[in-house]
Image 1 (cartoon, one colour):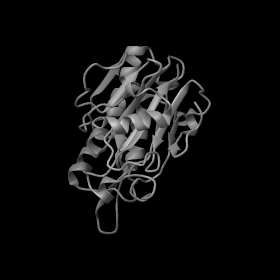
Image 2 (cartoon, one colour):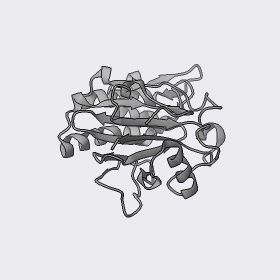
Image 3 (cartoon, one colour):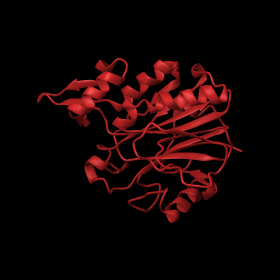
Image 4 (cartoon, rainbow, N blue to C red):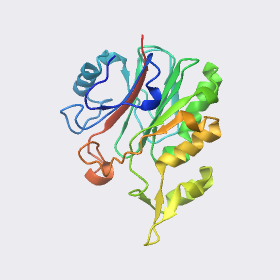
Length: 246
């Protein structure tokens, strides 16, 4: 599968020719307000762009949980209240949707296991990425030091101002929380979703050299990404996906 126009692809995955990983942009499809898990037309259009079967594009119904579901094939029913998927099945393109939350893609090149994770602040403090890594390790014999990760575009720490509820949850749950929180001139706190999830991955045993942070802000890159904080909750979504090639 060749590189596609209007798709973000990750340098850390480039050496692995048996893997396809991507994040869409506003220009990937000519349709706004995208909800791929609910809108079959949009799912078909994305499948055509990616050159995969539409049935093989798998989306959970995200609700900001820390629930992770492992797939052995195309599910017969909707995957409700789930924010991350894991599989070792070639040809399944597991995906998450974001519009300021952070997508995280994981790959074990030894055991050939992948995961797609959606983490807003609730998923991050719920340690969903840790749950995903743990599932890869416990169910598929993965070793955390072999796993490589890409942390995709989301709202940046410069923009992401948060309230006391988030601050207290971060201090309670995130390792080295002082690296992920700081106060601006007005005394309001900002939260770094990228660093928080990187810290969680490091605690899981990933090598720092095996983690790529794209560091592109969905809020500031208006022409490239959707942003719920900028445009409202009903805006479109970008899709981040990962697939083992057949």
